[in-house]
Image (cartoon, rainbow, N blue to C red; front, top):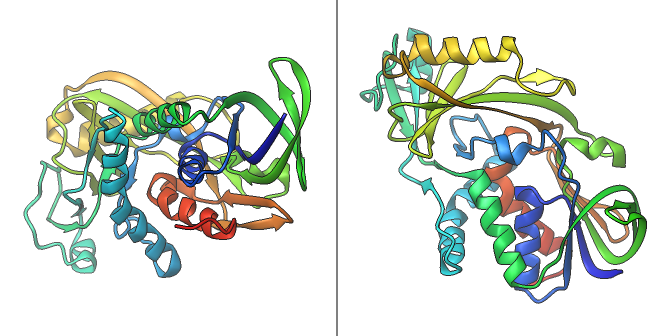
Length: 313
């Protein structure tokens, strides 16, 4: 088996990079291990550069992503793949005089928040991450880009080693992109897992993503996404501590959710570390360290990969 470009990891980062590479005529092979705890299925899909406190080059990268998303979703819509998304803004609610002053929170609240003193709306929005990934994979399939279920455990210039459905394999690849999220440590990349837990509730959603205190809400599939915890290590699943924190946060902070029905608990490992998109060895590239902003930074990451590989924009 051979590939011009092999992308290891089919989350939002890997799938979008593969899509942009394929659009420019490169033969791409996408490999994914289907890891439990992958970040994309549990992600909020928040597009909130300013409430997330980003600055410098990372803020510029985030603003690039925010600007790119409407066109990207329109492209995917041309494939018949509509997506849940909104770009009307993100709101930060001040819960104390200090927060009110720091955020200059002088606007009325867009959604009832117990203890809310005022709010400020910033450019931003959200996109549904699971639906976005599914749309990208469908587009790649239509562009005849193979998705191979495989666990890659070693790479070297020009070659990938791993295990697939038929056992051990080794394949040639002129270029390799590692988009492996929290599992980057196995390739010597400086990331670690930070587990995030979230809830999906049946209830009245806010009109836009809403930050209040240590958590946030956003619309999701006609209900409400409530996030999120941040817990070190590889412990899998949502435990009682996480459920209690999320349930108390939703119930105590937001009057419309006091009697909200439970729909689903979500969890995944955020890849925490210094954001890095670059070449680590000749022909081997990595895109790691996106933390809780992977969806937001994915368009910039894909553009940076094109630049590194010398592919025209």
